[in-house]
Image: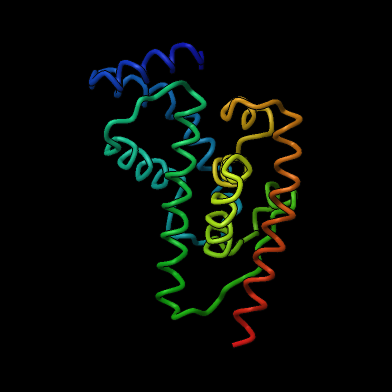
Length: 193
């Protein structure tokens, strides 16, 4: 999909062109489905959300976003990743609420998580740790969000944020280590009570 075409449609949509919005989603729909399938492959078997449902819900939320000045394709996919993160975390919270707190599993941010379809990370713990990281280092938080929730590779992530691939690689490694420590620290303090 040509990046300049996506950018032109995003700018037209920002200016209020509803036809541009429809053409944009036709253009990016396959990419959103690819990202959703990639992410959902890591979810537990029988997850309530299917990739198509995740894309549809993300689309509905993206359409409802008001007053966004879309810059380019990378900006769009960064926002789409954040929306998908919210949907998946809300779904995880709902599952835990229904179970009344049971079934919390360890989170794995190891590279293998992207290739392991049986993984079921604790999205709530990851989301809470990412919120803390975002307050101290927003860029590293965005790198994790794009890598983990949108399934972008390092090159796509660096382009979406506007940093070099080397910087994205360093941020990814540092953020993973920090998040794992934060999640472990939070769990240790929670189990002390």
